[in-house]
Length: 276
Image (cartoon, rainbow, N blue to C red; front, side, top):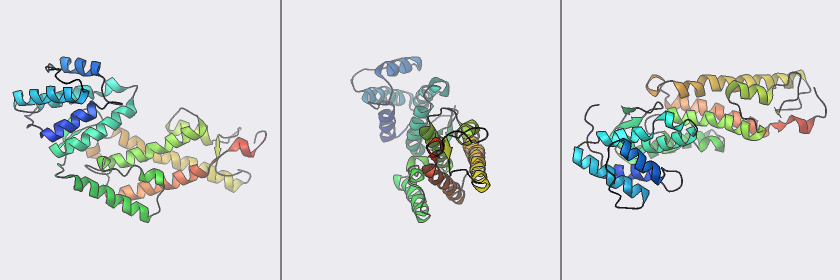
């Protein structure tokens, strides 16, 4: 690894606060374990978790005169295989860390690697992009569930993660409305398919061919969004799948339409008695 210059102490402090956050951060036992595994001395001067981390990492950075071992510790903590059972936690913490790391010109990828990123010089750059996107979406009367994802930390580099998170919200809403646990095309089929059974969710009474065609078309739209945007952003490196602002606006408008349809979708069993 090339020499990584010392992190600004304010950045390092914020990183330690994210990793040592009281409710969702690392436990004290985990901090001890990971510092030891990375060969970083734990001075244990402070009982507060984030302060312990800050003492250990700032001392190591000062001793090394570079941030390489600090970065190695962060990547050790954020190794994806360590968080298979808590992927939501991984993405949440990675997003917060990347917001801070952007001020150092770095980013943690989906695969848990460190790569150079466009360096943000101040908070206003990221906040301005978020506000501009939000204003444009408000002009389109976008669904509030989509506006939730217009966060500065998701827009530090480009619109990649905003689209990714927004499309994930579609599947989550379907799961909440149906209590199903699957994902992707399988979830769509289980929730909306009306062949030889009453579906979990229906856009209408499905009593006419036109209504049934609408239900089928909506299923295809959902599968298309998952396959084109969510699955691509989940697996493709961001550098090879760049999303510009206009693309993001159009994709998020589609996601908004889907959310409105889902809000109006009803449990088919409340409409019908018996089977189709």
